[in-house]
Image 1: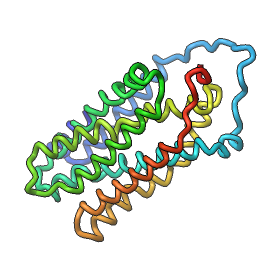
Image 2 (image 1 turned 30 degrees about the horizontal axis):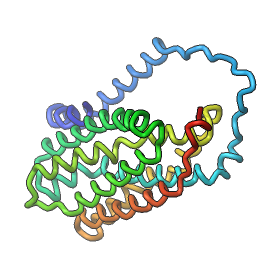
Image 3 (image 1 turned 45 degrees about the vertical axis):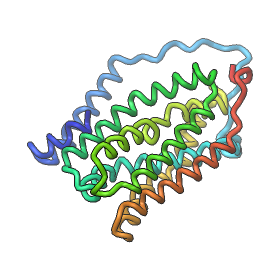
Image 4 (image 1 turned 90 degrees about the vertical axis):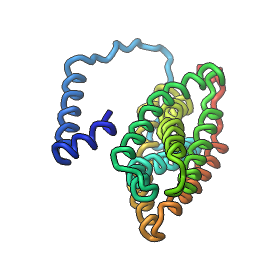
Length: 252
């Protein structure tokens, strides 16, 4: 919704109106959370395992591999978020509003994709996360590689297909990976583990978009930057191969 409304607001009322609308929306969300949401009562589980310490979690090699996957996927997502509209407008010569519409398509597909990947993991793969994560990372690599091959002469349908692929993979990985983290460390340490992996993934969010932009400026083209994301995705795929998923019995 934001990707659809922001360009129209900016063109009609100026760019400040976009940030004002975003701030008001965030404030309303916080107010609704404070007033309407209540944590469910927690049942006391006798004999439940105690939470693992941060020191113990930071030494878990599985969390490091998962954090590397997190870094690679987040780097691709933040770079695409920052530059997708500019890429379509500057490299493929697409109007800004049309490019923003395709960015809205990405987010719409991602909304369906996050639920769809979860259903696929639960039902078709019997609760296994690694095979689904493997598919997502492969599709992320494909999306970056396809973007690197597009040119101003490419049919518009290719850009639409790219948007669908980015939404289905590059923007839809968080649910499956978050679940994998929880099942790797156990529910009693879920909050600490997810927070720790997100800290490990800080380099991706800080360096991803600037590096992508630097490559685009340095070589005068987005193609090298997209190829760079392809290589990053291959590193993420290697990390997926190193993950040892807990058995269904152990998780239960």
